[in-house]
Length: 123
Figure 1: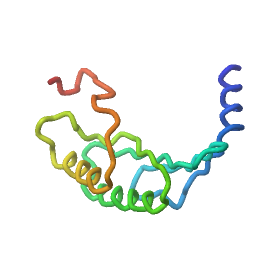
Figure 2 (figure 1 turned 180 degrees about the horizontal axis):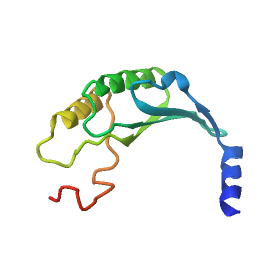
Figure 3 (figure 1 turned 135 degrees about the horizontal axis):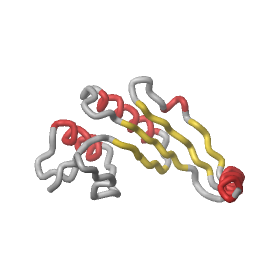
Figure 4 (figure 1 turned 90 degrees about the vertical axis):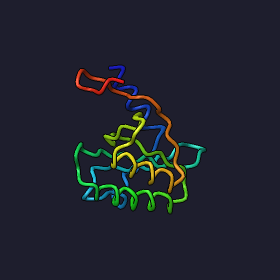
């Protein structure tokens, strides 16, 4: 019951709009425009990059970020990019991601692994 009340409360306070125009068939992404009362709207974009997916996925991400930037509002990019940014030597995919992050003037908010399993690389 408490979960239901919370969801109703959130739905009454926040107005969210799914932005289909910012979704790409080639990406597993979702973009939501969030409008809070008496606040500027912002975009939340999420993207999942499957491990060992083609490098071309990063081209679509760069296009997505360009479109997000043209919205001229605050934005947050979240997701699972399957890139190891904690390594001292970045692999090709991680370098591509960091190039895009630098190009778009984004900043990384999470600086440590969010999930470690028995099969994770231990450093």
